[in-house]
Image (cartoon, rainbow over all chains, first blue to last red; front, side, top):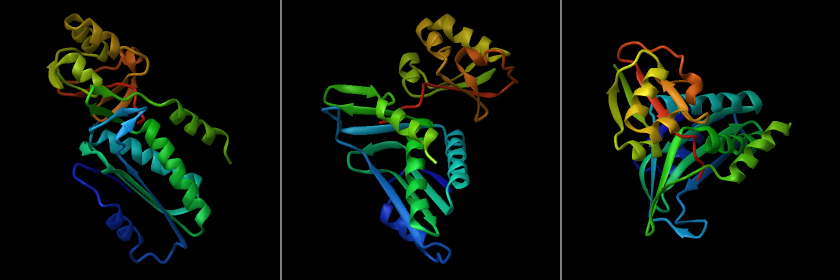
Length: 151
Length: 84
């Protein structure tokens, strides 16, 4: 399941919700991304994410479907913040449940790599030196390329 | 008239987020925008620009120009998706 959130998210509560009543899985892996206060040495005081509700979830749902087809997972949850975020706030929560741990680890790793390079969010960092829109990082593309050859 | 929405840095370049633009195709919309703001028009035609109609990706940059538009279609242009 994919959700966009325009207010603060609570990774602990999301993880508890995701695990509740689950009897089909022996493994749950989760990832929480936080907004960084520094990028390439420059201070960041606020992060703003622009998104296109409707379209953004549809692209993320395609990525979720890929992960479900590729890894033996029972369930997936991804919650992405958008709007204006303070530094240190959770920006994304991703969890996967599987019968065994390896599939859950790999699915979350795959989902994060794909979301970072394909999910339609446009990110602006504000800092003491002004505002700048973020471009894709070279290591994001390297991260996604490894899935082209991975089993 | 299509309702056109700009995302990310394109908003800063344009000075607006959403407005009605006349045109029967994406190419006509892009040209109408370019006539007013050449730099923005060039960006909208860039081969990495996401072109979205009614919440569905229909192409990238000027490669989507031939796509026809109906009255009140929602058109959106977004820069290449960023990492961070």
